[in-house]
Image 1 (cartoon, helix red, strand yellow):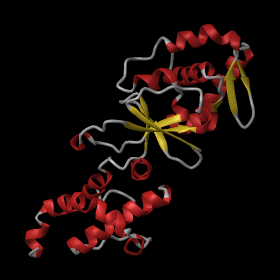
Image 2 (spheres, one colour):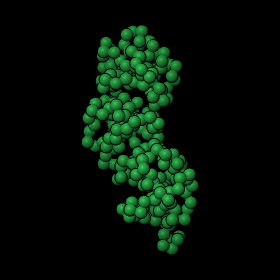
Image 3 (cartoon, one colour):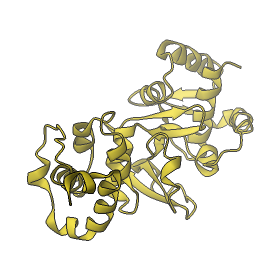
Image 4 (cartoon, helix red, strand yellow):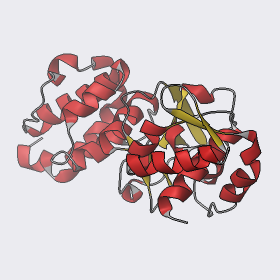
Length: 249
C-alpha cells in the first residue's frame, strides 16, 4: 500500500473511532499530500461504500468500514507520543515544540494544542498539558521521523509563550534570533504571550545593546511586573554569553 493511501486510511480510522470527519484540505496540508490523488482514493472507497462525503470537504468512514479501520490501526508503530499516534488523527492536534530542543532538556508536561472538536472525546495522559483551540490559521505538519504532528517553530513558540510559563522559550529564541520570524510569533501568540516575548526582547536589547528588528514595539509592550518575576532567569540567560564582561556590568 502506498504511503498516501495508508495515511488517508489511518486518519479515517482514528477519526471514525472518535465519531469525527476528516477535513480533506487539512489532511492534504498537514501531510503535504497530492490533493488530486487523495480525492481519487476517497472516490474509490466511496464506490465500495466504505466512506461518505460530508459537509465542507470532509469525509467519514462508514460503519461497514470497521474492518478496514481495524486493519489500518494495526499498523501504527510504537512512538514516544503513543497516546496521540494511536488515538487522535494528526489533522486534529499538534505537539507544540520547536525543532532540535534536546539541549533544552525535556519538559515535565508536553504542550499539545488540540482542536476544540475533541473536547470530551479524548482523555490524554497526565504528562501532557492540553490546550483546546480553534485550529484555523494555525501551522503544523506531520513529522515523518517523529511519527506525530508538530507545530512549525514560530507557531510552537507562540503557544509555549502563551500557555507554558515553565518552558524556556526565551532561551530557544535567543539562540535562534537570526532564524526566527519574531513578528510571526507575535501575531500568533496571545496577549500574555506577546507581553512575555516583548519583555524578554526589551531586556535583551537594553542589556546587550543589540537591536532586535521587529515591526512591533517590544519596548512599549514590555511588562515591568513580568520582568521582576523573570529577572533572574533573563539575567542568567543573557549575561551567560560574556555580555556582562564586555559591557562592564
